[in-house]
Image (cartoon, rainbow, N blue to C red):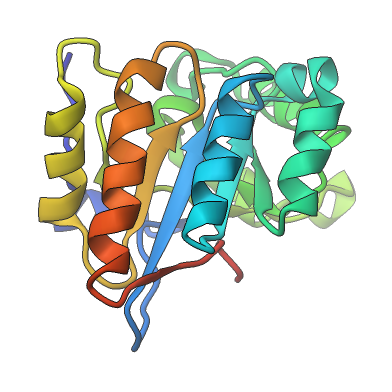
Length: 213
């Protein structure tokens, strides 16, 4: 499985419409969770975050919100933000532009947010333009496209939970956007890496906030 744990500068320049980190003056980290909501795993994440008074942003798949609306509402009730992650977890590189936009619009029926994260981080420049600056005639709202600074790698079944923790600790700095997943595949690693990440940075005076643009 090939991926970059820390986003390099040249990739950020290739996609200037996307947000890769957030300039801050304080010790703030932006934790994000992809692919939920999940009826058991998302509540675990919410309870763990609450132990550290942490706020996060959950990029939700529309069909999962449709299936678990109570869990989605709990995310919001706990003071976190949500974002659109398409309805069916589509790969933008492999999907027709019109179909991709329709799928995001379908998800927006269940996810009231102007934040969007492309599944796998795969989005074409045209798709990014259509989302961030939609034609006035389309009647669509503009999205802020949120990528990331650091991938924990919790989705990688070849990694240990400790390696995922190290990925985050070594590469995260103030303003970093960090990706975990509240999914069945990631849970064996995330359930250990997330508490350790929260403990490590909290002890060093960091706080965790949801993405507010």
